[in-house]
Length: 93
Image (cartoon, rainbow, N blue to C red; front, side, top):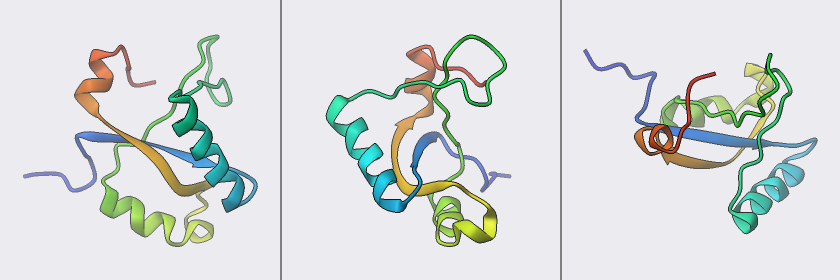
């Protein structure tokens, strides 16, 4: 059976104190062509960039009502193929 809660693509979503700030964060990623890692909830000294493997269809329903799902992210993000990210050194954290 194929799982409908996982995807071969990973998505990094932006967030901000407002949707406008989240959009500006996204534009900053696009302009710089860089994702900067953080240490927010990470229990190590290595900065990490977080991705979700939730399929777009699932993300759409979650992001449509962020306050209902307690999601701090906005509908702006970067998508990459999971295999490509793993080949570049990305790993689950």
